[in-house]
Length: 204
Length: 119
Ligand SMILES: Nc1nc2c(ncn2[C@@H]2O[C@H](COP(=O)(O)OP(=O)(O)O)[C@@H](O)[C@H]2O)c(=O)[nH]1
Ligand SMILES: [Mg+2]
Image (tube, rainbow over all chains, first blue to last red; front, side):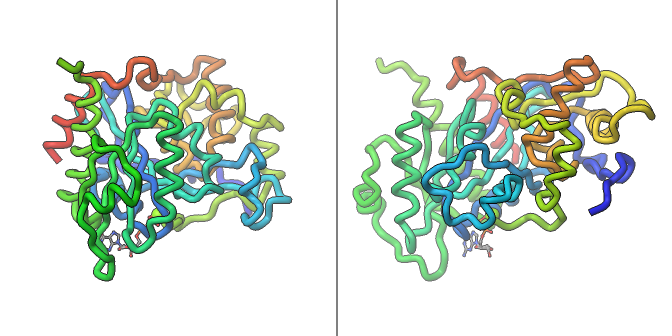
């Protein structure tokens, strides 16, 4: 591939630039299996068209054997979709979607460090991925909420049945969502923020 | 994952090696987060490495490291190496994210809730 001269690098559209007062950014991670709606959710609330960044695998783990092309150092990369919400003139929120399968956990170090919290996006047709993800988040001490993405064929369970199935502590919120709509996706983020807020509240 | 509708340079390790002059980006990752905001402090010079010049153009307004990586179509590891060069030469300013030790911070969460309500 030809080298792109810097003139050909297309940056943000003028309406997508942040004000020069933007001083601090925070991030929230959306984690779940393939096809569960991570990119859809990010796109529903993002003020910019979701972008893609790549992470290169820097450590070979036991779970990487099914990634094709491991013998080529730069081929072991994973794309992450992300979006952005300007909270106010100084504060910006970024949302990163990342796959939940164990073989992608090498991404988590840079991703969860400093993250406010996470949304575990769950498709009730495939709960297995969520088990490992939830266990791993608990291990790392990352606060999270569980969002059930409703697909037409998804079996619907009473929330408490799911809580038991996912072995979730009573305080962890479980919310239903439709990642295709902005309101619903926004409500998921609000649920996470309310939960984070409750964690800051000292018990009376 | 979806969303990759453009070509990345993952198929050309030699090129990435040249861009970073062989540096892995590991050390830089500890300083630069995905959401560290970068702002240019100087104008691109014709003698500069083209990637450095491209970053200075992109960061005319604040831009996160993740966005820079996306627009340059270069992996995070390569992007952070390039940014470390520019930071060392004081050609860009880095606005670090809220340090982990301060989280969760009530005022911060309140601000985010307020911002989300306006969506
Ligand atoms: N019915 C329904 N479909 C959804 C929902 N969220 C996503 N989808 C669809 O599921 C597919 C996969 O979504 P995507 O966001 O790409 O999943 P990702 O792999 O987790 O990023 C897409 O065709 C979406 O339109 C939802 O809440 N309800
Ligand atoms: Mg996706």
